[in-house]
Length: 390
Image 1 (spheres, rainbow, N blue to C red):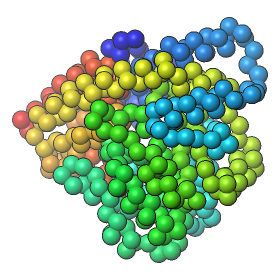
Image 2 (cartoon, rainbow, N blue to C red):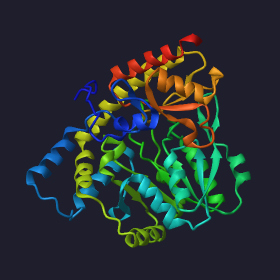
Image 3 (cartoon, helix red, strand yellow):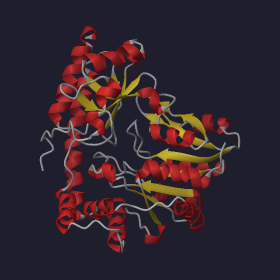
């Protein structure tokens, strides 16, 4: 397929395009949606064919016999990530926000602390607070435009009331692919402070050439007794509306605790998502992802080159994800001023940095998973909106 094809998503109940005007004041008629983390691309043809087969049959009953579905997940993890997963380790949830919420519910109690490496995906804090737990923000260090952990500072923050840590690997919004050494450091931190470690690896397939995602289960195999891994096909293949994700737990004790909460809450997956995932986790899906990453690399370069031409702006170099994290602090402007220039001047909807927690001040997040014509147009608009700085 051509990723350059522009598909009009306005009026289709698209959160990304139909909600940007009420939330950001940017009309889809002349604006560019660069906030919600889904892509403006069609999924692989195999996914479309799976859905067409369902509609052709015309009966939408309960999904049974999930062996092919589980085998597809296991094949993908083995062939793309070198990780051997057993079928009994795999739980299916309504996406990974639901997966994270279930982990909070299963492994912590009201008032417990949940450690987040901020800035980080905002839904982690949202579900933690909604469950009556405390968000403990361990700030990442911005080391020359690249986030790194600060274990000494984090150790000093721990009180003993923290029970769980959620890791975003690769990192959203900073685009880091954590090294094996960094992952072992995070695992050691979790062990030192007796934390259940939930590793959200939803962006694990969206890694650029020259980088390699390290599965936490392989980087630190000695922490399997406290490790929960989350993955999904939804981010990889642009099927987020299917609301389907996987929580993978090797440890039998942790698995029993999680299974008890899934049973108590009546969690069961939808058949559309299971058919889509089965079709996506295939050789055809793998070829599609490789083509996608080559295309996104071009978008990344167009965007970063354009941002670099605006004095005071700096875009973190993405090692993974399609979510550019742009620092506006060098402009000397207040958040209200630079955000107004982006939304009202450039007519672009982008995520506000403070929603990602400490360290997000001065930043906006831009979604680059859109046809290159949109990315090039966005760059031109941003350069015009900040023309007085050039």
